[in-house]
Amino acid sequence: MNMKNTVGTLLEMKQRGEKISQLTCYDYSTARLLDQAGINTILVGDSLGMTMQGYDTTLPVTMEEMILYGRSVVRGCQNAFIIMDMPFMSYQVSVEQAVENAGRLIKETGANAVKLEGGAAVTGQIQAIVDSGIPVCAHIGMTPQSVNVFGGFKVQGKGEANAERVLQDALAVQKAGAFMCVLECVPPKLAGLITKKSEMITIGIGAGKDCDGQVLVWQDMLGIAGEFQPKFVKRFGEFGKLMTEAFQTYDAEVKSGAFPEEIYTYAKSDCSDAFLSQLDSKY
Ligand code: KIV
Image (cartoon, rainbow, N blue to C red; front, side, top):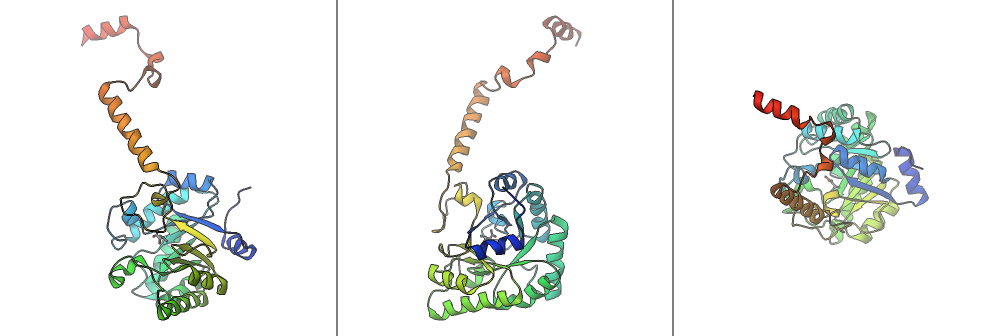
């Protein structure tokens, strides 16, 4: 039986040792499918800058764009818990701006929580957003909004000093009040330790199987993203190929006149031939 996922039901899943499913989503039609499939949580990720808008990074995405996509996702869901990504520079400038923008994302979309990137550096923002009544999902490890600091999309937490820093980030965001934390491109044993030491839910992407749940970008897992395929992406379907084949068949049938066949027309409501020839001679 499907029921609405909430912070409470998700935390109970962690306590019972049940895994939590999360996928990104940016539109109404896909959101309906994910919701019907029983996906627990949907992330309206700022990855939409890359998957929906064709940018190389997530940096250009604006608040207005997030709100537009987020609203469509919310309209498609009944049970999934919906998390809105806070776009680059919507929370870094000040704690006040972070609260204001988190409030807009919830108020103007109807989503359930916000996500922001960064560990110890953003605990002020996390605490203030949580204090204003908005659940927060943190995001540590490889944080795509810092791509220019990392010099590319690279695994984080390699080496002892970095591993300890990632653990410290996890403990800091948990202390600040985050109920969930995405661990991106974190080595699997380290992700397992963080999960064991956390009361918050850990959601892994490229972080191994010991996290409380997993997230993927839906276009990646169905093979409709571009050529680049991160190591952690498992293809659960080859929909890119299927879609291209269908578009090619449509193109060929339109051009040959094979489509539309009579069953795809309103032939039964047509005028008589006699009336059509009257019209033909009248005009
Ligand atoms: O923006 C996004 O889709 C994300 C996930 C990849 C975790 O942050």
